[in-house]
Image (cartoon, rainbow, N blue to C red):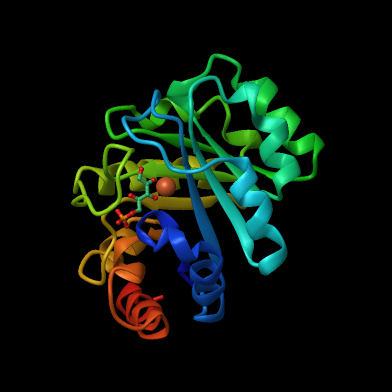
Length: 218
Ligand SMILES: O=C(CO)[C@H](O)[C@H](O)COP(=O)(O)O
Ligand SMILES: [Fe+2]
């Protein structure tokens, strides 16, 4: 079953709480929260205080995607704010093992994400302890970009890596996912689809999520 993780990046930030609750009620599996610092990516979004305010509004799984340099500086803040899955970029730090261990020590699931130009092979030495692998199918920083088809091969490689571990690891895809390509990413091995604009940019959220799930074909 494909999990749908709406990204609030293109939601109405003036009504952020309502937007999160609406997607959760519309049948989302995870809520994908994109944190950007204006340094790791050329854009800023929101930080731990906003997530802390959203936390009491819903019990949906908070899937936090950190796009910040040296995430080791802020990990504890996001753990306290209520992340259920905390995912950081391979490219953003040199302290990968320490970060994963600190996330696990808080009883939270740890994820690692790679940008489009980073090969899946960098994940090999961490796969044994990751709970989620995230493949970016756009350059991180902005919602509403087009899906990069090269990421299908990376999904296949990441799925093979996950199978080698014999562990249950979510394989998530993020960027440009719509009804017309969600079936392809499902076939390539993704079991979690981040969907920003296809949920929040118009239409009814229940219908948008239902259409994506149907198009995923699983
Ligand atoms: O991490 C992200 C961008 O860096 C977002 O999660 C992603 O872009 C979602 O938006 P859309 O589905 O509109 O592409
Ligand atoms: Fe994201």
